[in-house]
Image (cartoon, rainbow over all chains, first blue to last red; front, top):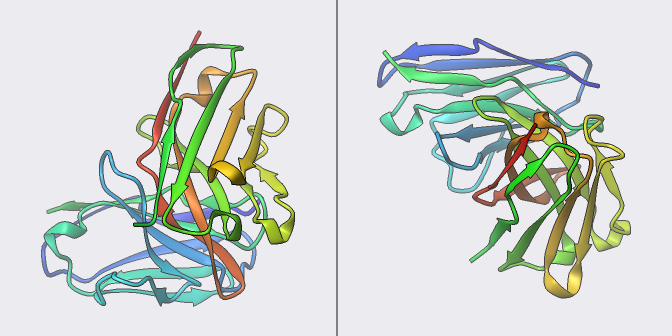
Length: 107
Length: 123
């Protein structure tokens, strides 16, 4: 199975900060990576697919990059509504797998 | 409005069975892959399985942790997806989400999620 390792697992940041989350795959997955945001008690929300394409309706402060084994999710200027947990998921090989998550909290 | 709504979650004893349902609306159900994803209390997301669309003969894929115990099926006449869960274990306790898969380029990504249904397996 392909393992996805997210780092950090937790980060504390302030409104307006630039935030970067990394997702590393145990083997190459081309650009078959998605990023999701999840708030407590809610379903995940798709932010980015194909590693770097913004889902319709998602603010442009979110961006994704990478291919192969290393990927990043960047929030250019953190807003109050962005405090949540973020997950990467690979769609290259079955079984599909998620990263362990990165919880973004208010400093 | 495009949406999927899960139901069927309950408290069940270890070794028992349960069937979850997911009803889709607002889109052509047969065109889409459908996934089940779960989340144990306080834990991350875990992919459970997938049913492909009509064009791909509704074939299925499963996570190793549920293969042989869980079965995904579809009823196109009811726009419904099901998760039959047998031989349940306490570690199957989780919120179960149904998700619509959509083709984005060369891969399928879940773009619409239900609100989830809670399964609790007691010992």
